Image (cartoon, rainbow, N blue to C red; front, side, top):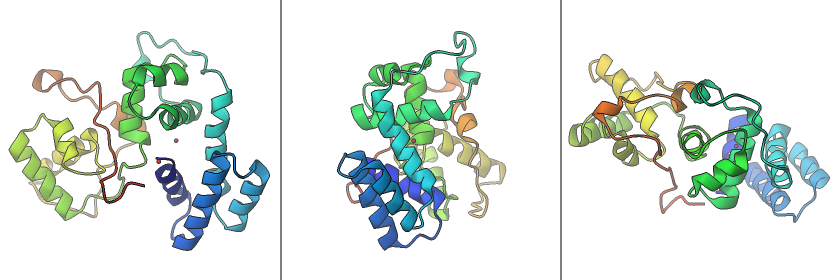
Length: 230
């Protein structure tokens, strides 16, 4: 998981990076995370490679969070919790918690994050936004055909199950893409993207009376051939 996270962060900040440079940066950041290489040597190495230093800063903040207490609850979440966007500090804590405990015990993860976040929120934030295996690329024609076939097979409410048939796509992404295709007469337009903002996609509601609860989002994991991860 750590490897995929680092690759994801490098790709976000460095376009058209050479594979050998990415490999060197990946090794340096892994060594830093695992206490094999120190802070300054790693930062210097990343800068020499021409990698955006923000990648190193992100990994450093994740590592530092293990020595810090849970974030204090500075907001009143009781009645408006869903409407409050996640902060960068909360995202860092959540990523650190998943690296430490794996994406399974969401109560423990929520306790680690702090700031009043609950297990359901942490699960949704991870599985709809932060998981490095999520694809934010434009939908391909093949994916559109798979999606339409899955909806025909499982119905227009089983988004959890449908997303499992499209590796790298979340339930919310599948629903939004299907709505787009429906409105465009089922035509696939790969040049257009239905990607929404992180928080809006995370909080997308799927009518409860027509489907089971989506409190626990489907977890994205690498395929057996690609397993290598704010």
